[in-house]
Image (cartoon, rainbow, N blue to C red):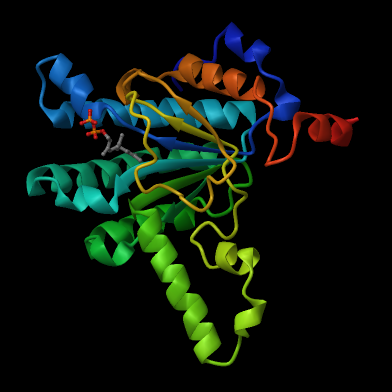
Length: 255
Ligand code: FPP
């Protein structure tokens, strides 16, 4: 177990936690470069951050943590980096599985597994199966994932239901689309965190983040720690979520 959350956790209102936090983990390469190291050293250190933030989310009682570990676009990186990253992710998950079970964490994954090496998929499926009885935090890894891939797949599923006579075109609504996404069993993210300073959503959960609060920090992912995560939640709790309504309407709804 790494260092616990500091005093900052007392500034968090546990009754108003985000139920689902999604994170774009960026800055591993720049973290390594700043130290004169290979990019892979940044990814290795990034795995330690994954462990710390999973612990913090579990410790606080957050329901879902979705981490953008590998995007569809990442397949276009140099082959050596892609292979090393895949292997690193699989080894890290296998190594952490006993601790995930101990901490009641359930591991799930979203993404285009057909593009992944089948041995990696098999090894990851085993970890998901072993943690499937967890009733605490859901750790959801987005692997070989992009929102445009997901939305295209959803369009195919819906079209095939229509073509098969199981669904009428006029019955298609927002819930139909949400139900055809990889995140159908999860609430939408309340908070989207991006490390590494770029103000982009990078093809991540485009449908699901419609009303997410967005928090960008310049901190590179390997330097993002439990306190930085707590700061993001404290910041989230200072925002007024209006979902398209006026401030006055929100106040009267909560009175
Ligand atoms: C972005 O940094 C990060 C990634 C492409 C990979 C993130 C993956 C991990 C931290 C490992 C995940 C491990 C588990 C167990 C889920 P970048 O390389 O784009 O950094 P840069 O923007 O500074 O170049």
